[in-house]
Length: 226
Image (tube, rainbow, N blue to C red; front, side, top):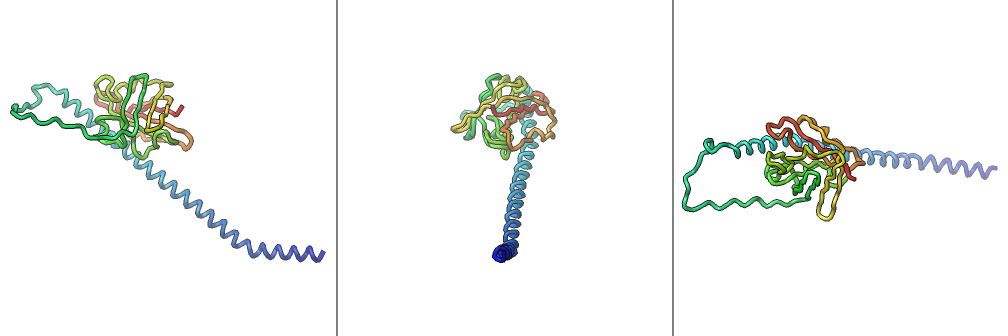
């Protein structure tokens, strides 16, 4: 009995010695965990804000494309002509651009290169992945924007014809991802909810202007990985 009591007292003594250190270790671990969560949250917020900024800049890019088309369709009387010269100017080569993917929508016969970043240069020739939205094929919401030109079938001109259940195939270097359209919507340019996502689904959001002429809204196609 005395021996058991002695063992009990020894164990209690050890616990008294160890407990503060164990408690401090647990506190440090919790602190590290909270800091990691905070840093991850801050990164998410910064990425989301950058994505929202790019989404906002689309309004200017869409308006610029509309203006370019208006100028291109101007009547000859409204366009100043220059006297011909003996030496023709060399034709301008299009800038060298590197596609990160291609996007195909078989139902509307779309087959476009996808460039990184929604810029005037990129969107003149292709669709553009909004930097800081989820990488294509990964968990999150990958957003791709393109102009809705007036020429039939050019860029995202026919995006309004996409229906629920249609397939969207995005091919990156070495990977092919198939998304299924879950719905479409028309929103005001300030509606950033189209960029929302959770941390389980692999979503794809296509963005263009609406209507084709004098656009005031945005046409959104929502899709999820099959």
